[in-house]
Length: 79
Image 1 (cartoon, rainbow, N blue to C red):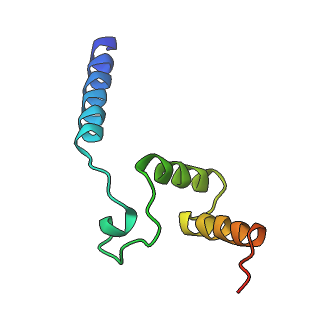
Image 2 (image 1 turned 120 degrees about the vertical axis):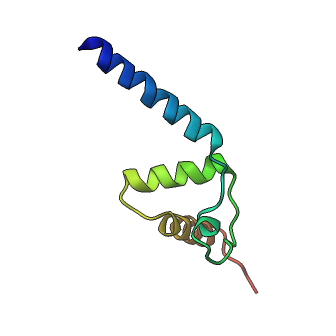
């Protein structure tokens, strides 16, 4: 019984490793066939925002809008 369980774990680890290696990073908009993003993020930063959003129950665009609003509040533009 233990051998069968260990074998199943080994197979699933191999599948996970292969899928991670084969997956190529694409912005969300390209995956969905939508409009190209106007803010381009490095793959690591994009993933950080996604995970941060999941943790705080917010969408990535909502987080970006909050960051931009905070930046504009701290750095007003005088025209």
